[in-house]
Image 1 (cartoon, rainbow, N blue to C red):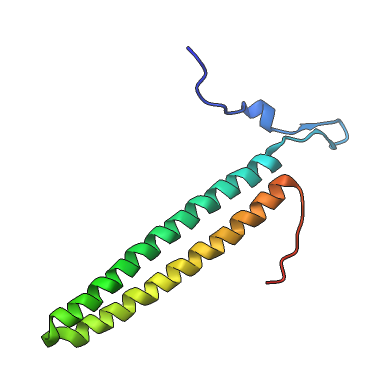
Image 2 (image 1 turned 90 degrees about the vertical axis):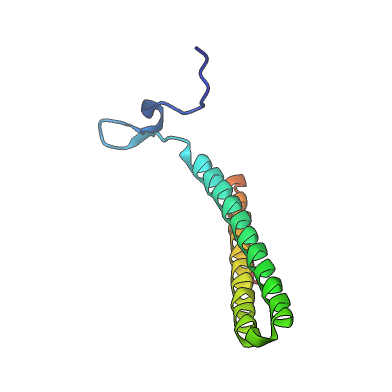
Length: 117
């Protein structure tokens, strides 16, 4: 049967020690951890974008309902503001994860850039 997954054996991931306790061979999971973090940040960025789009659609719907149902317009305007606030928050989270992804990518490539803003 073909080996479908590219997982390393536990023996390959554990460091090997000399008699004095110093590390002879260090596993190469620094790069894999950076790549894992980069992929995780990318997923979180997409989740933030999706939630932001859903909240924005909810805000537009409530704005429409406020015009369509003047009897409950105040309630719809409040729900519209809440949905808009959620959309802004989710967009901010997506932007934060985008910057985290960029930092993880730089760490994986080995270059260090300092961002002032």
